[in-house]
Image (cartoon, rainbow, N blue to C red; front, side, top):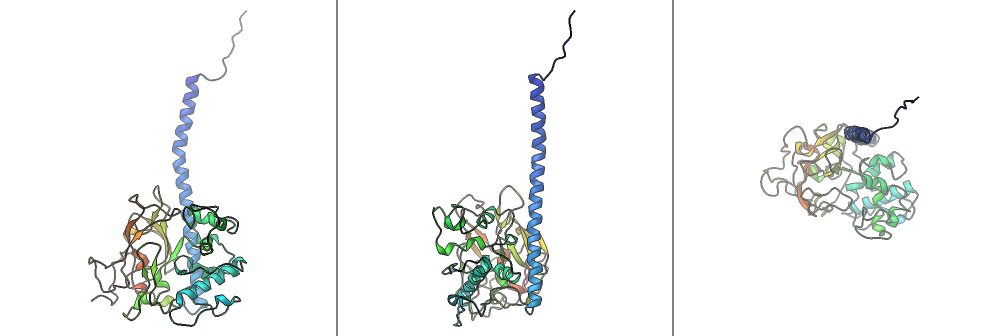
Amino acid sequence: MRRNRTRMGFTLIELLVVIAIIALLIGILLPALGEARRSAKLAISLSNLRQFSIAAATYASDFEDRIYAFTSAPSTQWPMLRPDPAPNTAVPNAAKQAVDIIRRRTGRDNFPLPAAWIPHVLYTHLVLNDYLAQRLPEKMVVNPEDEHRLNWQIDPINNHDLGVWQPYQEPQGETGPVPPDQKRWPYSSSYQVVPASYDPEQSRWSGERFPLSQGGSSHSYNTTDVNRLGNLRMSSVSFPATKVHVMDSEGRHSGRQDIYYAYPEAKVTIHMFDGSATFRSTSEANLGWHPRRPSTRPPARGAYTVFAYTPSDWEARTLNGQTSELVKGYYRWTRGGLKGVDFDSGEIDTGQMN
C-alpha cells in the first residue's frame, strides 16, 4: 500500500515571486521612511531655531531690549583676553570675548586666540550659550542634517584637534593635528545671524563709516573702518515678521542634495525677528543690497551683493559642478538693515536711494 507524501518547501519560481514582492515593498517603504526621517530632522531644526528665538527674547528682556551680540565683556580672568579700548578694535575685541566664552564653557583654559578672525559670522550664538550657562559644544546650534559639525562636536580635543575628520574639516586635504587657529570649528554653528543684527551701519550708513560687507568669496568679509559693533535694540527692527534674524547656511531638508542658502533653489530653515521659525525658499526673498553702495538701484550693476560661493570639502557643492560659482546675497544683506524687509513684500526704500 502506497502512502501519499505532502510536498514541503517552495519551488524556485515561488521563491523568486516572494523575493520580488519583498523587494517591491522595500522600494515602496524606503522613500516613505526617508521622508519621515527628513521631516523629523526638519522639525528638530525648527525647534533649535525656536530655542534661539526664546533665548533672544529673554536676553533682550534682561539687557534693555538689546539684540544678543558680542559686546567686549569688560572683565576676564585671562589678561590676554581683556578688551582693547582703542578705536577700531570691535572685531578683535569680539574675538577675545568669544575665546573667553569658549574657555569658560569648555574648561579649555589654554584655548588659543585665532588671528584675523571675525567671530560674528558663525559664533555669535556663543553669547546666548553663555547667557544660558550651557556647556560647550552645544547641539542646539547645529542642524541635525549637518553631519560634519555634529562629528566635530564629539570630543573635540581627541578628534577634531587631531585631524580625525579630515578632509571634512579645516584645513582641507591635510592630515595630522590642526593649527591652533582652526580649533574653533567644533564650537561653530550651522545657523548664522545676519550682519544687521550686530552692525549698526547696515541700517544707518551716513557715508562717514563703512559697514561690514561681503568679501569676494563666501568665506571672506570686509571690515574696514568698523568702529562699533553690537548694542543694537530689538525695537530698531521695523518689520520683525518679515526680517530674517537667524538663517541656516544651507538648505538641507528638501531635494537630493544640500544647497547653499544663496541659490534661488535653496529652501532654508530661518527664524524672523518676531520669534517665528519657518522653512522658506530663497527664491521668495528680496535680493538684498550691497551695503557699501546703498543708493544703487536694481538692476544697476552693484545694486546687490554678488560673491563667489567656493565651498570647503564639508560644505554643499556648487550647482554648476565647478569649484566656485557666483551667487547673490539675499537676506544676509537686507536692503536697509534692520529697517528693511526680506519676505512677503518688495524691498523698501529706507532713505538711502537717490
